[in-house]
Image 1: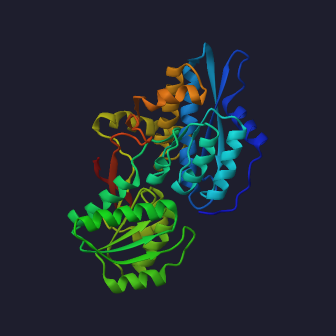
Image 2 (image 1 turned 120 degrees about the vertical axis):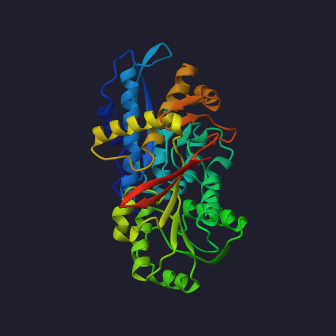
Image 3 (image 1 turned 180 degrees about the vertical axis):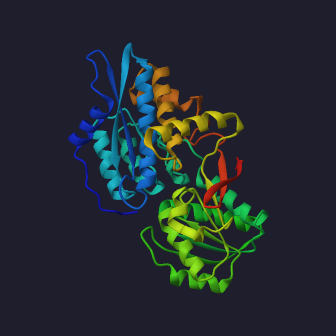
Length: 383
């Protein structure tokens, strides 16, 4: 998405980091962790959720008093806003490079993560995205690019198969928002659905800033699909659901993690329906991690006064995984801790984290949800 936002000068970002982390003692080693997400614009609620996850990790690391290179590690968070805009993403990525961060957690969107990743790679930085799912991110050959969630190949494909096997869909309509994420997850959904025998009767495109879908939905209604899949974010999906209801469209509405939020209920209102929406989150907690994950979410709510949207726990785990690699390497220099990150085995609040040779998480989980009684309702956790 592209939104106007006020850029924070580099000095301001560093001042924020010091104010947040507290002054470091002379004999401490200062470790700067960059975080980037959309803190302004239509999906600012998701960006803030991610940033909060980073803050919790930084505070916990400083409370632990990790020793790295024979000195007490003082972690500082340099938080930047990319407004979900690819151009702004590259600008703030360069700011973090210039600030000499030791590693980057982000970005949230695939459309911002991918262009920013080249800047980090050229600078020799390590980047872990907690939520970018487009496969292209880790297919560029950048040795320092990682993600802690499953990619669109798994997510979209699973949803496509689910549409046919469980929802018994024969005719499917597909809409995407023309972003790297939206197009990617829609393409994988189509593969999964067609592989199980479904027919895509219409494919339409909108944008990540659109609010009027009457023409698209009228065309789709004439095709009478069993399922409408939307590749995009909740800020667009909510109004789309409202307009579907106004037009009398009763097809199941499916989407990826971009729509699979608590805020979708507010954005869609009573158009959310009862079991009409099915979505998947690129991640998921199996039984062995449930207790730790729920405790973490309770702590999050106590600290920030709101519940987790989606990816805050994955941001937290991404920061902690990076810090663990630094500890094992006894260094915060990217070139020195990168080999340890590549072979890391970290037990996080979202599950066990280790990476394949591309930087994708091994055995990534997916969580399927629907919405009932105005709340997100768990369907299944799968791999």
